[in-house]
View 1: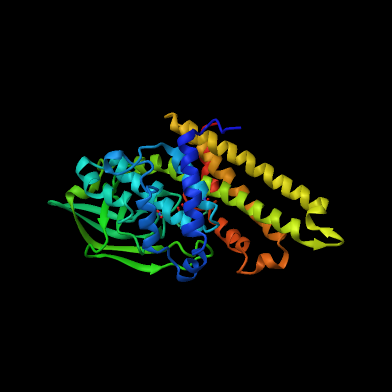
View 2: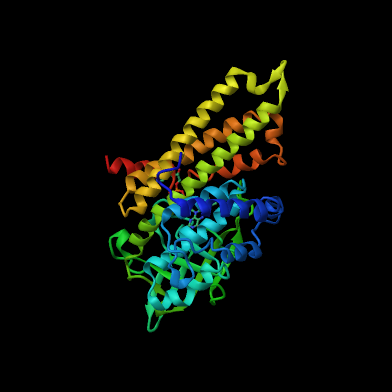
Length: 380
Ligand SMILES: Cc1cc2nc3c(=O)[nH]c(=O)nc-3n(C[C@H](O)[C@H](O)[C@H](O)COP(=O)(O)OP(=O)(O)OC[C@H]3O[C@@H](n4cnc5c(N)ncnc54)[C@H](O)[C@@H]3O)c2cc1C
């Protein structure tokens, strides 16, 4: 039966991305994991075939679709099994560039969006700092107005696309005396601006081909027109954008968990022990059935929440429940899937070993599970 939350346009898109993933990502992912970054050629190809403009306006080269298209993108990229590739793309499409699309002036959008949609320029969103993550309002980076310029000082931590990106949307305090959330603004900072530097490329537990950086801002001077949206209203933009960020991360979690189940089913049906296949063993069948149930429930809720958002509904409680649940169950499922691969599951050459590592960050990034349930409880 057709999925009631998607239409024919989404189905065509899904098929198109599936083919792209099989041809352009799956054969090369291992090499990118080794080198520690996703090559720009891949990102340009993704731009050329329209994957970076799904939600951007047509006049900038985009397709003007809603969050359901981004959900399809995240689900299909996740099927590659390379979480690092998936997150590199999704940070660009649904976590960083939406700040420009939603709050940018016509001039800012004309200047930057066409190259962002084309994959010629890659974007990063810089909110987290060494001493402020979940508590966004606790950030210390400062931006001070000086004539026709803003001067930024501070540092950012764990920034995806931080090393190889081109355009950075940087949150900074512009009114340190305002009640914490009211004095934050967002700025466009281009790579190469004097005083802006990449401190470290961070080594990670998973997502090895996604680059993650610590960034420094030392008297970084940018033109006044690089303020994005209204001064001191940045916190609200960040909170608004979090909703789509959390939906695509949930889509990634659900789809990776489904892929892990598929890989594991194939393994246990082909592996012989004690006079039959592993699949013949009741304990394994039951565990896999439980895993499938959790993933199917999460996937249905993901599709429903994507649809709800596409109808213009404010669904913070639903998005928070989805993110908390989907990212947690992805980890539970990965644990069992790795277990049923036996010793081979512990070997770096098996995809499940990488998927298990990659999934660990999902309940942390983009709003940790604990914070998701704080948001849910606030609305109960
Ligand atoms: C690989 C990776 C990529 C990332 N990419 C980006 C990026 O591109 N841009 C960006 O800005 N950030 C990025 N982040 C940062 C990410 O969003 C933060 O790590 C996340 O928000 C958690 O913040 P924190 O690490 O400071 O942990 P903390 O905020 O210090 O939290 C630590 C733990 O305490 C819990 N906790 C915190 N507050 C509460 C509370 N009130 N009640 C109960 N529990 C609580 C948290 O849930 C968490 O489990 C990335 C992180 C990683 C690991």
